[in-house]
Amino acid sequence: METKATQQQTIREYLLGRLPSEQQAQFEELLFTNDEVYEELVMAEDELVDEYLRAELPASDLESFVSHFIAAPEHQAKLRFARTLRKYVAAEGSEYQVATDERVADVPPTKVLRTSSRWLGFLPIRNPVFGYAMTAVVLLVLVGVSWIGWRNLNSGPRDSGPLLSFVLTPGLSRGEDAGSNRLRVSADTGTIRFQLLLPEDRYESYEAALDAEGRTLTTKSNLPKELVNGQPAVVLEIPARLVSAGDYRVKLSGVNRDGNSESVASYSFRIQNP
Image (cartoon, rainbow, N blue to C red; front, top):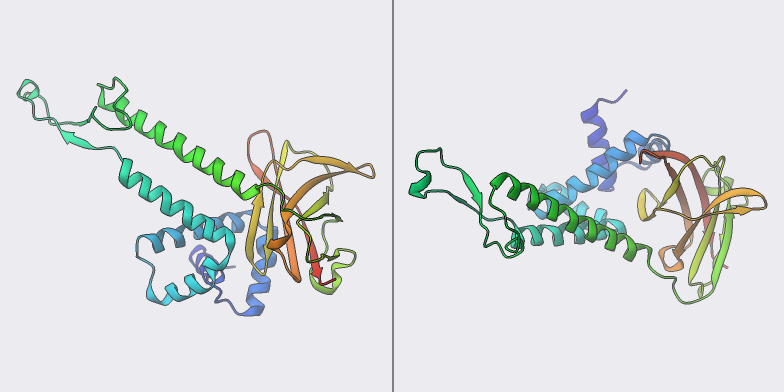
């Protein structure tokens, strides 16, 4: 069994495209069946982006980061979001000063929030504790709004062109064993609509991630549900331009009432040229 450090290194090598093909295939199978590994992968993605933006990415990793990691559209979006957030925090971050007024000379020096701060100046903040708390709340709200905007942009409206609809069944393997999940998509297709049949419908909402060769192409949350021949299914729509001929997999997760996400099923399919 791998140690935590070894697993983290394996994940890093995988994200940078340096795992041998056989080991990569084994890791992908583990990724789709183990939620903890998937969560470690997401954290490792964030760490790579952070190291890159802080210019702390080792030279041995920089080339792989640029040529492989950042080639994924979702990783590009993460990088843009992280860069924008860092610029915002740098430009709008709270300013502090040490209190030196003779009227408070008999108490230990304390840091107080400048009420002249451009984006909090309208608030009657006198207590530094409330000032820090308000700063944190406002920043969290702004980050949340930015995240929602990015997700909405990521979802986006349907592309122009015909809509193709396919029903996918869970549990099939990639490649030649994909059976009926072989899809022909014409060049003029605008949007692909997947109806993902559910083994059982017991979650408040569902989210999905589309993967190709170990790279996440897009993620969607709050997927709508419908019945397909009396069987429950969730609907995932993606722009046809995201995919070309090759093998893909959709990882479907359910979100319970507590907001926790649990793996539900995976759906493999192959795009074939018409």
